[in-house]
Image (cartoon, rainbow, N blue to C red):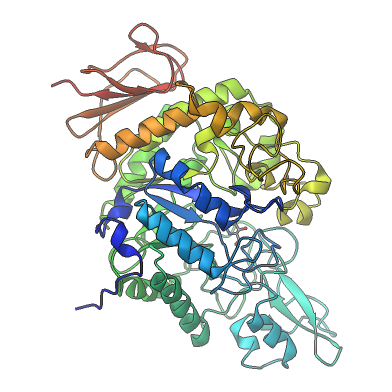
Length: 557
Ligand code: NOJ
């Protein structure tokens, strides 16, 4: 029998070891959620004071972006201590209190663990720099001599995902120009060497540290990148991830997750969620199932244009690929790395691709159209079988802020591309809670530090306060849908059945009682047979479903 250790505060959440198969998970970006002390940066006390907002919204779990001590070279994805809380966000005692209070409200907590790389301020990396080439301390990372007579050229031509070379040269303790170290992201994020047993043991311990404190799940950052070919061969720019790639989606990465699953299984009801951006859906499915991860993010769905046939194909593929492992699908419309859904769906090209952000930002945005579609997309997404992620602010209909002044931008992607890529700051702007002017209740009062990124003046129309009473607001649409989703047993985990529908219309049944229809065409469409309306994303047109509108219906008897 495994030792099913109970978490200190687990008693308040219902005992349900498969909660993650149906859960509505709110992605909380701490820095931009709520600032309790007026320094312009969100914090854990801010979250604690707003937990009732999240409970009212009807979510089942919160995924926190990294909350650890960090120099913030990549917004916390550069961790200098995996067992503590970033001082700007609070303390470990705040995190303990937050976990307990969330559990008391029936909300589970998922934290973000970043195993591919640490911070250049992490004690391990400081120790590596202080020791000579070949040391045990350096073997936890990827240190290599440079090429060329003076070692002045990087060990290979790999490029960083954030732009520029993936190698940085160090100065040795004696002052001489020395070895190079690998960083697939920014230079401040050195990659760990996962073939080193100390690295493996360290992360087992980090997982246990947080599971013991009551974390219910782990979101695994950059999960496909950990295993590397120690020969560090050159790669072409278009080399596909997979067994022959030197670092992306190699077969040996799966050993790591089998080990992590064994740790998670020492506890009850803990979930491992992989962040894996690989195009090959068959290979993606290899990460889920018994003995490995519980779920993976569904990036094909997140990147899919607003097109009925394409969405249907992505939905079918997702379900087919998860089926053999009996893993639940996940449905994600946006996150802190991509454009906000209102803006994406308000453009002439409604797809998204991380590599082409500047192209998407060059297209005009029709906010009214984008909002209408985002409402319909929300109902579609929350009706699909499996779990759903809601990135903070989507429930308010926030848009991508594309006009942040260059001097205020923080994303390393912006800096490292010399502004050629606008980066991700536009989806990370602090939430508007109340009032007529910035900081819109994000910080306690005017006169405090300004929010770390500027909020658009027009967000006065989108504050929680402004939307709370409006029956037609985005906030109330999310609340209504999440509450119905929770009360209808057929929603969440389970199966779906497509219904015949007009061109450009998606219609499907969830069990015998709930039916969803979404009109992505340009013409009003007949509603499927039904015994009443549960919720609509917009006004119906005399019994017809208008373009860019979705409904949940009670199925006919
Ligand atoms: C994925 C995270 O979502 C992103 O924000 C981060 O920059 C990279 N991984 C590197 O950790």
